[in-house]
Length: 241
Image (cartoon, rainbow, N blue to C red):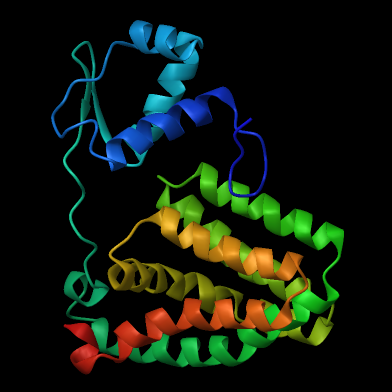
């Protein structure tokens, strides 16, 4: 039985979506190609039509498919490379970049320590909370607002898993600043990696795995890498623009 990144068995629509996505990523389904009908796909996978429709809708939300009412389902062209957020907001980027750099400096000091301490002190309930947030991030890969909210929550849950109320309070005091800066942080990460929300999910999964294994050094290193990628792009001359 196939499982997702958190070890949960995939639902029918999830493994149908996963298989079609794999074909898209490997180029076995070309840009502009029309997919078989819902009826044919249901027969091919041995599932109900509603399961196929749910899988296709998820892939559409990820920007991989174009579903035309009454006209079929087609493979969309690959998304353009992520843009540096400074190109999207040139008039305000200097001030935003300075603020973001300061927040990242605080996060580097605070969160690498939180990751290490969480690996030492976490409970099974903490792991369950973190795994639940990872599942939400995975379920909403095509919804940036929901993904961003889950991203912030993951970092707050990690702080709670240290079982040090002072650290948890410090992260709580950063909550609004994290929310305000997360959009730019995620945009910079995507720009640095030239990659997708799935890759970002795997970064969080790696932090979770280290915490679950009680490997404090690895958890801290993974968090350091997570933040360093954004800092690198932000620190490039002219903030990369």
